[in-house]
Structures are given as C-alpha cells and as structure tokens.
Image 1 (tube, rainbow, N blue to C red):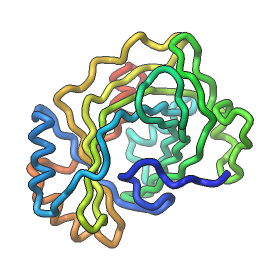
Image 2 (image 1 turned 90 degrees about the horizontal axis):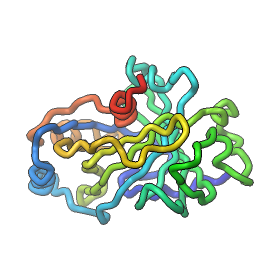
Image 3 (image 1 turned 90 degrees about the vertical axis):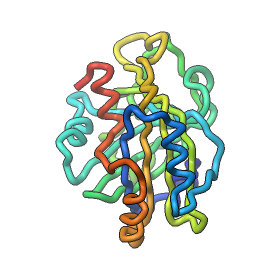
Image 4 (image 1 turned 120 degrees about the vertical axis):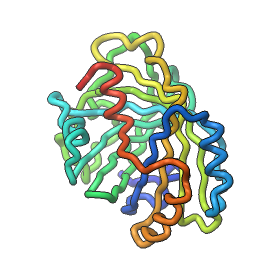
Length: 238
C-alpha cells in the first residue's frame, strides 16, 4: 500500500528521521505559552489553522509498548489511528501511523484506512480489522494485526514554523483521555488538562546546533513527555 504524504503540517517529509524536543508546560496560561512562541527570535509563524486531533493507540496484551516507553528503551514503537475534527461519528479519512523511535530520533510512516464510525456502544476491534477490504501492507509485521486498542486521546493543536521551514513547532492543549476497554466507551473523556501545554519542536539531525540556540531562548525547559504514557496513567491502565 502506498504511503500518502502526511496530513500533519508539522511532520515534514514522510518517513524522514528527525529530532523532537518536548516541553511540558504546567500551570501557565496557554496564551502566555503562545506569546513566547510568537516573540521568539527564530520568528515562528502560524502555518495551519487550529484543529482537534484524535488518536486511538494500540498495544499488545501485556502492554509492551507502554512498558518500553516508561522504561526509556532506545528502540520504541507507537501504533495509532489518527483523524481530525470530531471524536465520535463518521470518520472519513483515518490514517494508521507507525511511529518509531531510535534513541533521540524518530520517524513516522502513514497508511490510509477505510472510513469508519466511532460509536460509544461498539467495542473497538484489533488493528487488523481496521483495514477492512484493503490488503495488509507487506512492509508491516503481521504481528501488529493482533494489537488491541489501549487508549483514546484528543487535543487541540496549533502549528508554527520558522520562515525557512527547517524548524516546526506545535502547541497541544486541552488534552483529553478515554479508555476504550472494556465494552462501551465512556460518555465523556476524563477531565481535560486545562493548564497544561505540550510544546514540540521538530527538526532534522543536521540542525541540532541551531536547535540548541532556539530552545535556550524559551522560558521553559525541555522535558520527557508521552501523551500515551500520561493517558494510560490517567485512565488507570499501567
């Protein structure tokens, strides 16, 4: 199956390895975080309209991907189905994302999926069923087909980039979590993190030195952060 160009303007070239630096900003008005981005000497400018991102994360029965993330393994993988807009109802353009991490760099491959309806009353099937009549991609390990939904999350994202496009930055806020198991989905997500903003800076390996200069001009510190790990802790699945 061909890989489409990423629908995420923060992603850059599909399949390319890149660095990500994350800032978990707590107890600071999101408007002040955005202001720090807009007045930064790197001249970040908004490149896309604000929108909601929805994800269903998949994991093995013993939650091996979660364990790898918590333990900080050098080789990690994240498997999720992503779409934009409303959480429930008809999802017209879902995409399977396979995100791989090697030490400090990562890459993401995308695979289009058939449209589906997300209904609170229907249990979510294993990953293999999400392809419908489409063939399973030959480059994906067959063992991934048995992965089951482990977490649903959603958040509002804004997109920024430097004028030359070498550095892309996202602001994520209003992060919400739902547990997909067992049985019916919850009527509403767990309370959103109102005063938490996740800032992510993304760039190519050759721009590491300049990235140091950019991050040092922010009034917040680089941190480790995983929305998957945070969400699993929030819904009580560890």
